[in-house]
Amino acid sequence: MDDLVKSFADQKPSAVVHASAEEAPTVQWPRPTWFAAPSLLIVILALFWQTSLSIVERWYSSRTFSHGFLVVPLFLYLVWIERGRISWLGSRPNFWGLPLLAALSVVWLLGNVGEIQVLQQFALVGMLDAAVWTVLGNDVVRVLRFPLAFLFFAVPFGEGIVGPLQDFTAWFAVTALRLSNISVLLENRTIYLASGVWSVAQACSGIRYLLTSVMLGLVFSSLVYRSWKRRLAFTIASIAVPIVANGLRAYGIILLGYLSNNRLAVGVDHIVYGWLFLTVIQLALFAVGFKWRESPSDGDRNVSAHPADVAPLPNDLVPSTKAALIAAIAAVTLLALAPLVSAHLWNRVTAFAGWSEPIVDVSLPWHPAATYDASWAPYLQGADKEFRQSYKAGERRVDLYLALYSDRHGVQLVGNYNLLTDPRLWSDVADGFEEAVIDGQTTKVHRSLLESRLASRLVWTWYWVGGEYTADPRRVKFLQAKARLLGRSATAAVIALGGEFPAEPSDEERILQDFLSHTSLSAAFHARLR
Image 1 (cartoon, helix red, strand yellow):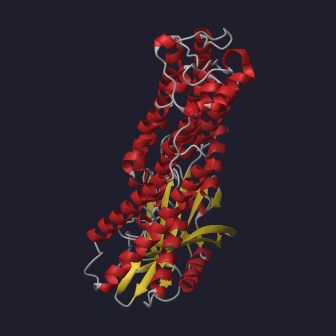
Image 2 (cartoon, helix red, strand yellow; image 1 turned 180 degrees about the horizontal axis):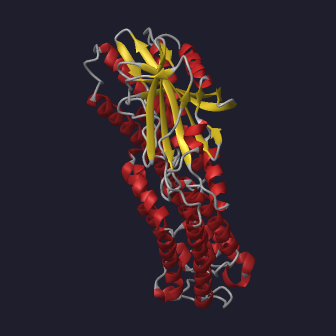
């Protein structure tokens, strides 16, 4: 509150410099001014309803992001507890928010034509924050800066750190087991003990626990502390504690299984024990943090907005109904252009009749095999046509998978629901990139080691977009967005080549490369129309 008083003092010292918390003037905001901001937010959500729906669908479909259902109620609560402070703030619309809204709408448009869902979602939340700034002005946004920033937790993001979290959890568990004098071997993300084999899967990464801890930790620190140092310290603890706790959880579960000869901490017990432990750790973190709480100073207490306390402010600080409505209408008009431009770009995309049966030219000694193992193939949705074929050369065998995508709106080649393989059957134990020669071009491919209960498999995965091979999903999005902006077709494909390796993955790498040196994939894409 001292900062707010100082802010007013800088503008009109004679009006408020001597006002105490109890004597602070309040403003009766005109009702249309109060309605302008929430109404504008609702209109923005309606204009970009597909992006809004994608956020909620992601909360519902993924347990990793189910914490998103808490974001809006917490946001509203954080705004509600600041009602006393903003009730007496003299504030005016800030039309500098309009250029920011324009920039964010361009970001959303690029995310839309490139079908980068997370970019569209971040842009949408940014629009909501910028709209509040535009209609209510600097002083109100200064008070609500934390709730507005907190709203970004609604965006389902963070999957990029799942792999590093898996690696840390595996390393931590193995290190702790060795310190416990237990013989253990770590290979990629698989832990071998005399009593059995454990794999640190994506579900064991702790990403869900980490995201929830950080979100709740930020809210807790904003409510309990006033010092930025304590808030920062607790936020760091909210990041470090769940990461270390997840490693301890993995160590405890493996140790319990080892000591009980795998009678405990397996199956459902694995999940129950793990979440019970993490819940206790989270409660302990809050309990310790609460001991260092700071009582709010008098200047930080909410000010009553009772009508009897209302005192007029200078006219230039009283909220202007007309200005707020003009700002809201200008913002809606500006933002409405983005969906219209998006619809125009998608409507003028080059017409595409569909994929013909892919043609893959393979020369001797490789030839098609009669059988095919479909269990390892990428777990994709929305493909227009799929091609599966196994090939043999003597005792050597590889499996080829192609998923062909036309340029239909709403079908993402690279998306959250498209996975390297069915996680119910295979575990991805190692990832990386390496170079391969494809159709005479040296290209990077995504290299994955998969394991199931029965076999181990090496898989190379890459994409084809507009005649270019790439393993970089960001490059895929760029090429597709570029094609749509230029009115060209953004047809694309996913290619996966795999084989089982009985000994060393390097042996299988040589087999995969030998197959590619006798194969031409270009015909599968260039003669593609029915």
